[in-house]
Image (tube, rainbow over all chains, first blue to last red; front, side):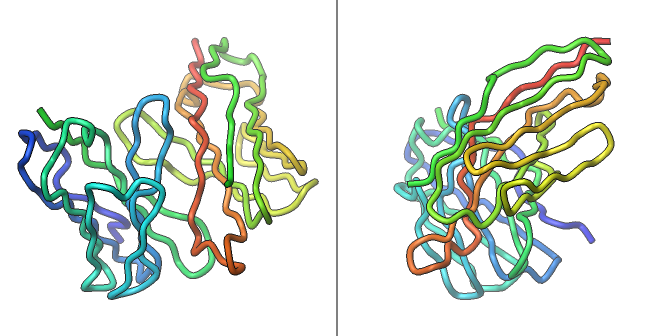
Length: 111
Length: 115
């Protein structure tokens, strides 16, 4: 099992550009989550999904959109990137009961 | 609103020097307190889940304990390979009795163990 994988690992965007981060899990988990991690701020929840075709807002959803068309994939989109979105993004998945498993992260820089 | 505060922000130890990390929390209906380890450039790695006051769990040199207001991660005779950031998180009951597994994280404690 690969667990939770994220692509890409690194990305540099210019202000106003768009991009999509892909999260994939092969553990058949129902729940999936997107976090951002900033120095001194800890991990903050952006959006989450409780199953295929469902999404919900987390703590810091503004400027991001998500989709979960397939159970194993959870996409995070930035329609018009801003420097404030420079961060490290982590995806996580979780079965109905148990802990969250995290991916390796995507480091995004917006100039 | 759930809140998690970890202290200290950073901790430097000599190899073999035991110590503890603190995680204070306020939550409406605790459904689990989680400890994760995060190495530089990597995602958090699960260590422990504690569900009720008085519960303890151990793994190698690490022992996690839980009270009604805080959790401690005790590190006994640490080694340099224990150097990492340790994250604490809570899961609450949430509105309507479910939070869908959402976690609220603390800011982490950066542990450095010198040989």
